[in-house]
Length: 210
Image 1 (cartoon, rainbow, N blue to C red):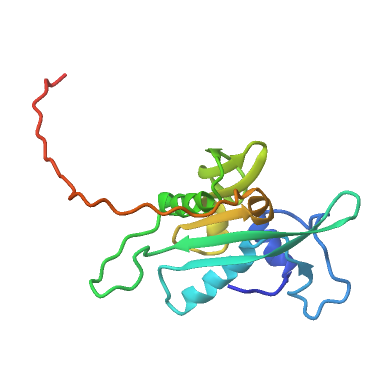
Image 2 (image 1 turned 135 degrees about the vertical axis):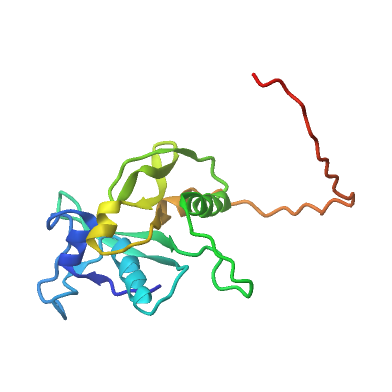
């Protein structure tokens, strides 16, 4: 997805669960009332795209955006950083000729996040985090030393209720500049497929009830 670099302040307050933040960069002469704040997060745009797709009965959405976000620090300095975000919902199997369906869950989102981090060839540590807008018990952060690289989890039920969204959504946010700077640059190595056939064993064991 590719959205405007501007957001609606009212929508931002809902999604980010905050009043107007001092770090937001507000335009003095916006082209429209709903495009008055420089985007501080990718999530509002992704949620807006999700809601528009829902109106057209689309299910099984997998959206991502790789764009800059903007903020102002305590000294008034404007910062621009690139972030990568993805949103996952609905039938993870998508449309298929067999009519199969399975709802996306936390482990699907976590697996996608780990696959992206694996491409960077970094040794990451994962631990639970409790950041808004994530569910307090279904969120995982990934760190390389003291540097936060990514966060993934289910969106908070209060946020979904506020936006009148009935299905669970899973969101991941990557500090792309940090991730890219630390990515281990190595030439890929390929390993030949084994020439030996696989072996499967089916074992049945009898054990005591205890």
